[in-house]
Structure formats: structure tokens, C-alpha cells
Length: 138
Image (cartoon, rainbow, N blue to C red; front, side, top):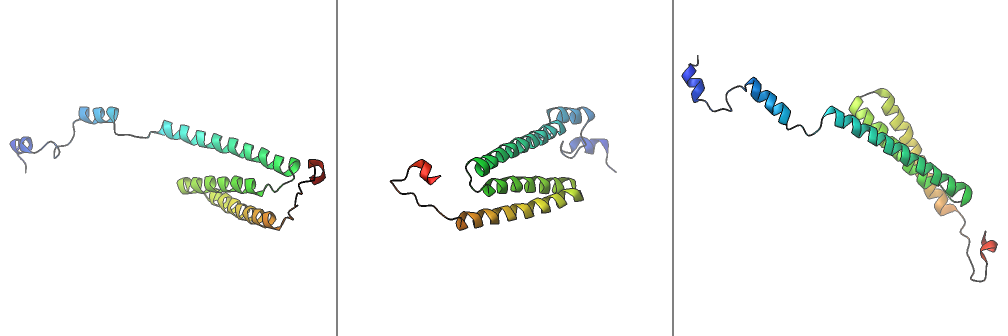
């Protein structure tokens, strides 16, 4: 059994921390991330995803209906973003609904990407002559 004199001779690392020392370390802390910061980070990510998807949807609508071009590149970005979001939630929360969402969005993103490639290379290219006006081409 240790004697009182032996305890005093041990280095400070070997001795248990005093209550005041523990409170001081907790207050100063080496915590680089707390629950409040985590919640703010999650909310900002959700907001960024929502705004990004809204902008992608508007651009896809403009490409499809106004410019009459292939919007599948923007759909691919949307679906990939949702896939990553669902998969990340699944890894952190381990809930089945997130992996189902990730698989569905992953399949849609692959379909969208293949459609983009197919329509980009299969669309007939119109050749514009120098003598044609803009109204003749459209």
C-alpha cells in the first residue's frame, strides 16, 4: 500500500485530478466542437442544400422550357446532392429510411447522368451557316 510520502513523490500526471482542475479544464477546454455548433452546422447544411436545389430546379426549368436544351446535367447534380445527404444521415443516425432514400436518389442520379450523356451525344446537331439569321436557326 502506498504511503502518503510516496504519493507526494509521484509526478503530477500520475495523481488524479482535483475537482477544481477538472472544472478549469472543462471551462478552458480542448473541445473543438460542441452540441450547439453541431446543430448550427446541420441547419446551415440543410439550408444550403435547400437553396442549392431550388436554384438547380429553376435553372433546369429554364434550360428545358426556354432554351429547349437537355436539363439532365442539373438533375444529376440535384440527385447526387440528395444521395450524399441521405447517405451521410444514414451513417450518423443509422436509420433505415435514410439508406432507402440514398439508394433511390442514387439510382435516379445514375439514370439522370446516363440520360444526360445519351441525349447530349444523340441529339441531332444543327449546323449554322454564316448566311443564316438567328430566326432561321430557331
